[in-house]
Length: 285
Ligand SMILES: [Zn+2]
Figure (cartoon, rainbow, N blue to C red):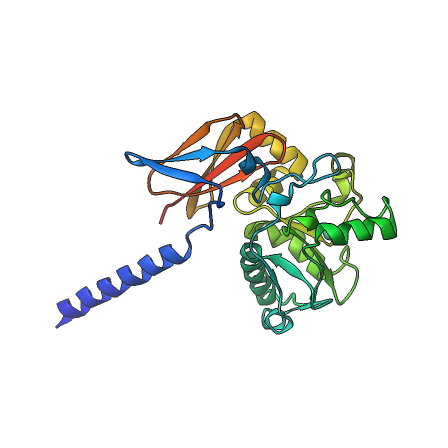
């Protein structure tokens, strides 16, 4: 009898672990990726468009977002759903990339567990038309021209606190400390104004995904610096305890093909400045 019980328990564990692995698969691949199999390896042909697509795009006053880089999975956040996850919205028009929203909700749940729960999203995705209008209305000191704002990509959001200003609010402090664990970075820190060209914005967070956010936090790099760092390093491996990530930078060239190890999840992103970054993930447990 005991033996049967043991076998049954083992079987249940295998099923649960299997489901968990499937659930945790990285969202990957843009529509433009051509993928083939070469023996065990996956061979990916990179086209020029790929440089302009992905979570690691550098978008700033010098580097305009290509319309192809606008997240293809934009959704409007429902107010009730927002309240379910314990934050509120300043309007009914807030849109974000769905992929990023999943990470954002995970982050909100964690903040709640720490009793930090007065978040208010004031801005998410902004269309190029909206950005052009904003630029015209408020001028170059307060807004960037269309295509030069991260909000145009669907990968950035402005978060405030209903309690106080973000620079002093517990919400702001919590996000600056913990956001990286969920793929988010404070995009315009106070001490990096000379690099970003943008004044301190304690409300503006950008999604770059894991493990990039963690590396940026640990090394105190803003996206401008991180993109350069990856290009200099060429390749690096990061171990987070549960996972091993390998990040490889390629200079884009026509007919670039990339070979990916069998049985790993992978994500490919352009950096908007001539490079392609491949991130692979292997689970250790
Ligand atoms: Zn912003």
